[in-house]
Length: 431
Image (tube, rainbow, N blue to C red; front, side):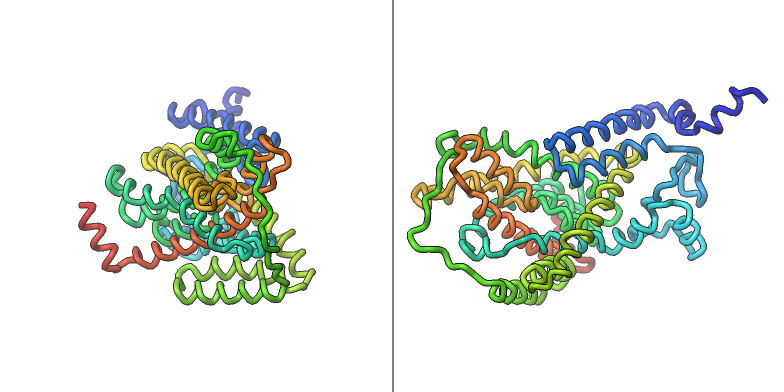
């Protein structure tokens, strides 16, 4: 037996790259390079490092580690990896019995994490809980109406992309709703909504959402500079005539508890994420430092690490080349672009209504990528006027954006569940 006969069996990653479909092979190489680029941009601070570095490494690795391996007969060409099988645990009937489930859980090393945390939205709830533990709702309570108005303007992408996805791209109402929620720039809520309304598109929607959420940090500053003149960007907001009310921890905890119960009463379908978010807020304000350190530290960062890593592993060439992914890419980009534009329009609106007292850049923070868009607003303003501080109001708008996205997603999930009259009406209209 010569070395040339053994080589293909030993180095199967190279073998599948050479012998596989040319389109898939080119896509694999491009995705490996893209993964490296994401890691580099995350390290440089251009993109959000917490998500982009593990996601980029996962993306590069999964497209390199393809081999001839198909333990359950799920793939027509017999190619697979030892990382995870996306068809297991996401609402499909591919695995027919417990033995198959145990087998694949034992073979693919990330499969238990994916199956037991993505399939039931646990990963989204853990991230939301950690985010809540970092949020100070005092920023919202300081100027609640301004914050909520900015957040509502920043839902423009969700509102516009929903009908566009149905009318021009042929998506069903449920698929269109799941895609449009990307415009809210709230990763856990995107995971939650797509799994409830369009589980068959869960993987590409999740991948697209987090790819673009990473781009918010790099792209939105340019959008701000295009839409807002330098004079307004450099505006220093005057101190309020009356000293702002300072809320103590007990009052903040009470507000969080009431909001949690009220939103859960109105939108029970979104209650798991609403509860997780406000549980984090309550833990922050409770004074129980052990809980706060646990939730805002190990739980949040472990969940974020495995979220980014697993999403990167899901970015295999077969998934990205799915015919439905290109429209998802376009619609996801459009949704976030329109939401950013809507937020800036909201900022300009509040600038006019306040008589020039509110810096319009804070409008971008209504896009609820917490706390990324708030940091973007302060970064842009500081570049033009280092003495201008907009971060407190921007954080309030950002937190309000989380709440408005949860409300809109809950409404969509309630109205578009199977058998709903609204769903049937929209299906008839789209046909």
